[in-house]
Image (cartoon, rainbow, N blue to C red; front, side, top):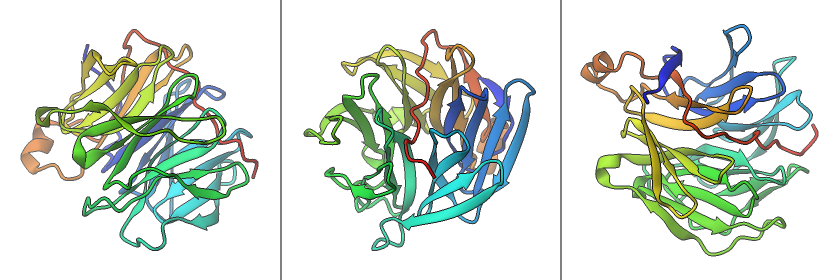
Length: 291
């Protein structure tokens, strides 16, 4: 099965799709375009907000009226109705070349994210934002590009990747926030590209977007490949389950860095795609803090 174009977004770096089951809307970010986007499933309309900084990732908030944003320099709250931004906290200020990258909420409603370093040196740490808006550095090895943040259905396992190493790790994750020892979950072959964003289905399978691999791949809980779906864009960035029955997989892609010949061969690159993979997802975990 091949993914079909949903929105011809022409994103420079589309990332972090999130489905809001309360409103039937899909959100995503164009990081390099410094924009937040929303697609309304009932009307097929899109809306976008221009932000003062690049938006690496974000989370739906439990109150439904705000998003928690992981902007390039720090964490902020965004009021969806007013379109206003409330800066909160800088992150990793000692590393000015890094920015916030991929992130997701754990099952307790805490936002966990990694950092992006354009030089790909492993200097970026992983962080967790608590409901009281305190930011904690996690006891994980630093990464060049922290990616693929996802949690098992019961919340006892966290997945993350250091993209330049083509490796996805798993680590035991306690409800109290304590972490186990990281172990290799999957190591991609060079021909597969690089591990980018991930999502977990209701059966515990991990779906990973493969940057420069033109596909989304499912691994079962034991790390065995169980499905692979082609995307008509080489730079596949992140999947998310959504739709009324959570049986659709939405996938973001990117145009940045493609040559003129590649763009001609991939005219839909940067778009948001959709497919029905035969598995169902889970409602997106929401940030438990109240603005």
